[in-house]
Length: 296
Image (cartoon, rainbow, N blue to C red; front, side, top):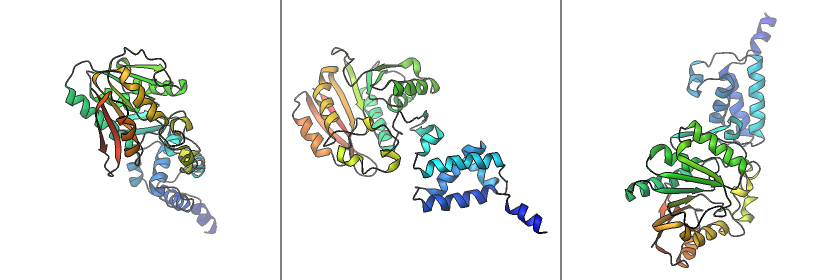
């Protein structure tokens, strides 16, 4: 009888593992502990997360327990879940993500939303749209997946990031409509490029604040895509200054900005007389998140 009890005690079911792991994550200050446990366990046993709920009594094999344990260790070391899985859902698409690119965020989904509105308002065929600092390709691929008439260009200074973006474009069946190329902002771009829209999520976190970020961001995501210089405005100021040379008349520059940067960005824009119309869009949390600068 005691032998049977001991054997039963070692039969860790899905529910047992989820309960223990959620408590462990919570004790280690991991966000959304139960959800994270479910995501990692579903990945381990190769099922959808919702399928776990009808398998609560299913025991895990030793191999499954070992593989799950390794994922839990990585998350407790504060590695982002997206990097552990190697993918992230964004907008209406799925993306491969690696430590060479930022994990796409809801703030950038709002930038995509504003860009789509501007594309639709223009009602112009064959628009030329340039995604600068494309990273995983999230912006360009999202736009190309839901608007078929524009021609898209996307650049990044990181060859590794461009490789991720190109694979994502192929996986989402839009590779033929996006031209990826290596460039540090406008370095490899002709001044007569004549873009109708330039859209970018540039680095905008002030250097002193980078060390205060959550470990998931500070220790794992690419610093070059986060650090915006002493005041967070280094790259934003550069783009505002130079973008008019690459935009067609009435072309638009769309920038994702920090939640507290509206006034500073507005001041920068006011110094460039090439932009005749400047306004800001609030995200769903009420922050001025997207700067819209129209040439002309």
